[in-house]
Image 1: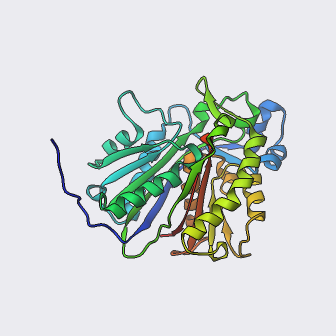
Image 2: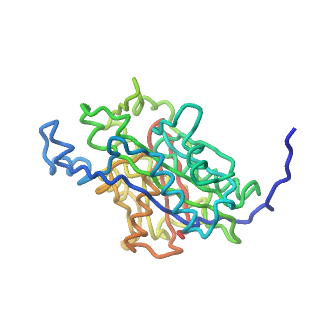
Image 3: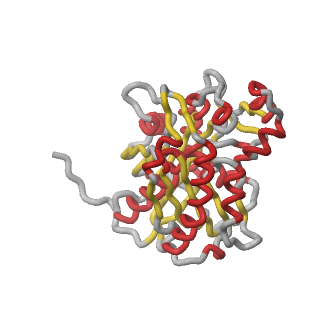
Length: 321
């Protein structure tokens, strides 16, 4: 029998230490997306907000991007691979080799001796994983947790389906969560509307979605979800400096923002314009974009919210690294 003591004392708080990303080099324009359907770039942008997105080239692997993002997140957190206690991978599209998961392959290539956990909550995957990381650190089961959110949505999207093929993209992002003296990650508000699970589903290995119904559900959900996450964190929505919603569609983001009582100077992530919908990877990818552009200062208060397939959702307030 294997037994071990809890390796760390229970923590009074946790903190997001780093965020990093890795994107495919292949850029697909709105014109390219619309051409098979006789639509131009303006038509695509009007309905989705997307001007370009990134997709894996033939022979390019999602694992390589997951490893790249994870390695950068570890370095940015000023850690060594030996200090990572737990790896949580969030994906709904990664097809690892037989007998291995994405987490297995990331750990192998980075030389990590960490425990592994996989989360499949689709577009809410990163926010679910962030909550799990927070709980493991607070309980003393881990001191440093690496989250890897990676998707190859183009590999499960039917190129002949207008409703999905113009939206979904590929990419990977990673983050490190560590123990802290004060709470830098607020309590999660999460759940699912499982009765609507068939609104977004895979069938025959390909993604299918009822776009208009999903749009209405998301726009109705986000204001209440955001208010509840802020309330659990002991703040008001107007205290938020940064809003990072799942980058499903620019129309969903803008419609949700109009229903929120945000300050005028709040920075709203709209990474979907350049990156498309990357499911579980979209929240950390968008967060990485804001930080690389210098749009948000360190220690800013951000509300993160994911929602999507299975009609799963999760949101929490975090202090940015």
